Image (cartoon, rainbow, N blue to C red; front, side, top):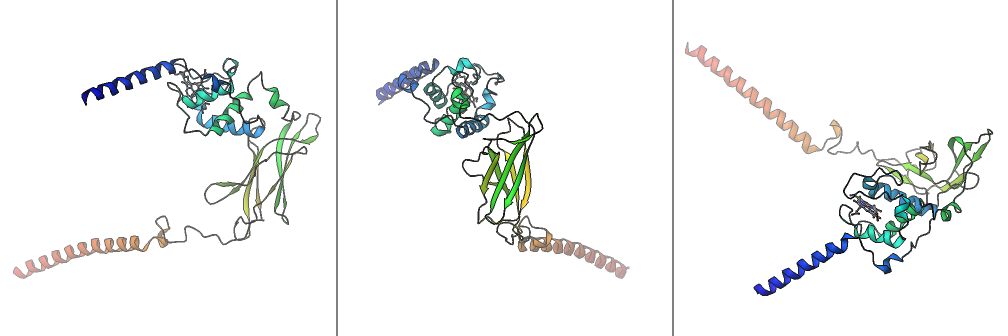
Length: 304
Ligand code: HEC
């Protein structure tokens, strides 16, 4: 029994030692190295990779190319630097999956698809491979005073947004290939109704179908917010509008029901009852004491 235990302990020790030794150089198996990103460098993939990067990687690695990573030892690599980007897709994928030292493993916490999206985003910063993206992207003229106009086609419940900017020669032109978010305000949070490919066309327009079953207020009104999804190029640009194409509903006011968070008149019965009983009890005791004192003083008068 003791012997088997010793042997087991030795095996575990040797295994863990060899594991740390392997991790030292962050060796990537040759078969993994050759793997290529199965996802194309489309705008959508790059933008979703960017979102993932900003929420899960930026805290340590900083902004790509800016060198503003956390001062850890060893430092988190600047993932936008050309020195790093010479690595293959497979290598980067492997490193995100395994982690090392302060770099956490994303084996379980990020889906493979999300990992590839992040890699697509990092590749889009790669000076050597960037052409792949640029040929797909549209180059808009330099503009100022960018704005969004919203038009409503009530009959077909369609929303038409137009994104335009002012060119140097004073002409207003549509901006193409920009992702817009259509958000409808709900009781808690916002509902995104943009749909899949929410990019403006060559006129700068984007048409979105308003959900036919979306409830609004009594008059069928809903608060719509249209904004540029990626704020990097043109800054935070948005347009608000009340549209009257939602399904008219009598919204239940959550304050009008009896609940813990209700106003005084709508508090739950048991709270009111407890409170009233408490007040009666306290006043009762006070009156009782006063009454007894009164009796006492009467007794004293009598005994005199
Ligand atoms: C808690 C901090 C932290 C977070 C979060 C983090 N990393 Fe890292 N990362 C590091 C550190 C530290 C290293 C350097 C590890 C080493 O070399 O020992 C590193 C190294 C890397 C490397 C290898 C770089 C090279 O030079 O080969 C890649 C690739 C990487 N991280 C990608 C990511 C991605 C993608 C994310 C988000 C999904 C992420 N990291 C999130 C800390 C972090």
